[in-house]
Image 1 (cartoon, one colour):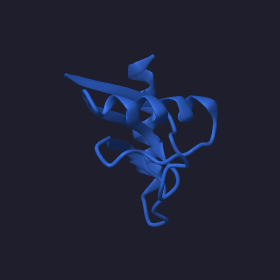
Image 2 (tube, one colour; image 1 turned 90 degrees about the vertical axis):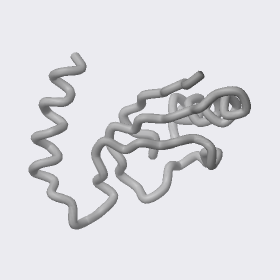
Image 3 (tube, helix red, strand yellow; image 1 turned 90 degrees about the horizontal axis):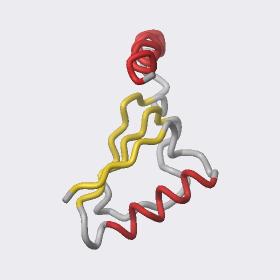
Length: 83
């Protein structure tokens, strides 16, 4: 069975990020766990994820050479679809 968490930014050090990390790490013993991260701003997440947790980044702003205009355009329409 698969479990997927969706979070806007797992790079932060807030409570939601910590809970997602804790739950994802604990659930890897019994499930295939993935975390969908909408916006990656740093090279590494603030909290340490188990190596079994698959992290999928939709937008990657951690690279200075990324095309931020196209990414912002994509993010605008992506958020409109979700809402």
